[in-house]
Image (cartoon, rainbow, N blue to C red; front, top):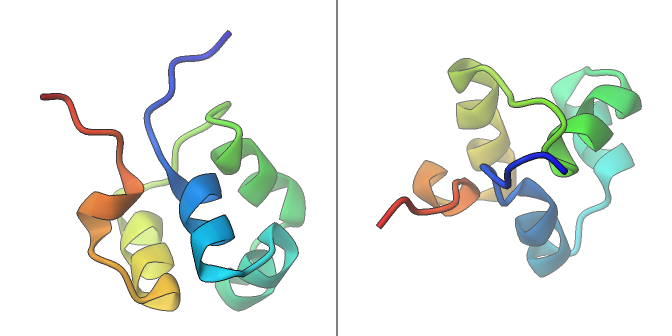
Length: 67
């Protein structure tokens, strides 16, 4: 099982947005967003910043805290 690094999936649920909607707004393949949401891959920082903007959250809310 992959290590949980991001909280994108959780924040999407909180914001009431689907992975497909995020993929459209990001102009990304829905499979890419699914991989990010399942922590199978991690977004580049530029993409993470864009996700935070789309979801209207602080970028730190998309990451699992280390402390």
